[in-house]
Image 1 (cartoon, rainbow, N blue to C red):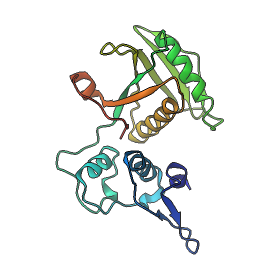
Image 2 (cartoon, rainbow, N blue to C red):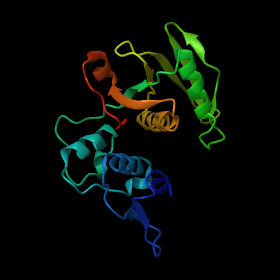
Image 3 (cartoon, rainbow, N blue to C red):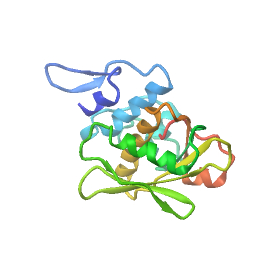
Length: 204
């Protein structure tokens, strides 16, 4: 039922076979993002994309899900996860406050195994360590976004693709569910380093 958790308004299930499917097509950008999340968490790659929209094909390629596409993505599409998110939080006085707010969210996800440790200073950034199991530790780094007042940069860099996707989805949820944060803009590391890019409202 993982796809239904990610896109409940889009998913259906065949009562005879127990197979899940898209009951309707996404109607807007948010629903497209939820559909991509459903594809990302589906076991055995059981959800497929039969369309030819190059934007969707590119986003699926970013997710590493080209095998679920009936048509090839653009030649220049590849796995390039967005690991940097700039968020508007004008009420936050410091990166420390942003880290503490995120730590609160980690504890409210509904997954008891997820724990956040107290934030720590890490050079010019604040680091927030968290885990969703006894052995899997992840980190977020928070700093001021020097490009705009009232904005903060949160970045992560898991080594594995599945972990990158999982952390990005969770971080996106934590930020969107907190009224102190708004106007999320996601970037790949290369996009962020290059500057001058508007970013994307979605991590993939």
